[in-house]
Length: 328
Image (tube, rainbow, N blue to C red; front, side, top):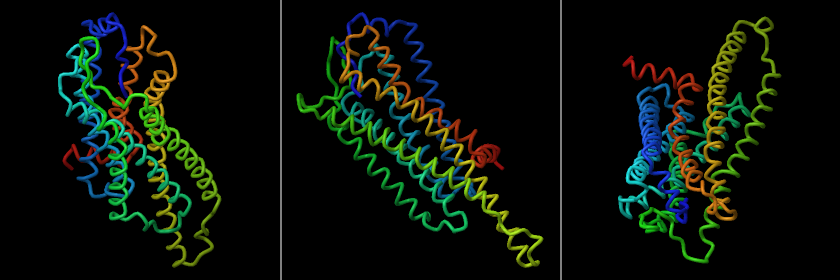
């Protein structure tokens, strides 16, 4: 989203003090390191460990890949921007790429979370059926569709982003056609398709999943004492399979909940700033640059924190980390 370029020169001088430069230098450097190493480790663990190559984990791989791309392309440009006293010195091409990667990667992230929520619901809704719908081929098609729609989502920003000069400073900004309303339509649409609608659907699916889980637990498999030997063996196998599937579903449930909550928190400031900037009086506030800058940190912080959730809430992936880096 475009910056508040109408701010006073004094506001810029406040943000370019040595203290503030060190704050942003440490902040963005930390995000960059954690985002690259963390998401890279997730991708490596899933690709290297055979038992982690499941449909759900391929979607986790897609999440980590989107976060990796976002952090790798966006964080360095923002760090360079701060280092050069809020002056863009990387040209139009990098400006277009860094601005377009924001809506594109975030679209990929939320669409993938939505897919995980749908798969989780279907798995719980049909616990006794084999999940043959999402094969590797189907998963590949789904992920390809996610990235196609994501790139199309970022295309308008890619077309309008360019360098522009304000108050003797060069910015990477969105230069939309004047008095056409395209900017408002685009970013309101982004709010709906990347935030409001997906989170509502995921919340609905999560509630429905909890209901299905309670219903499935109410169903009791035949007791082994009432069955003959052959039936008892089949019952034991079914129970073991159900327990293993339930563990996997619980892992995915915890991880999905954590990822969605983190996404909702980290994406909200950007949308609040847009509506406040477009329809409110944000530009008139002396602290507008601080507000915009802090809001701009949240999306990339989300991409850097996600790997911590993968490792802490997904037990199989956590084990995969240890085995992968332990060369076992």
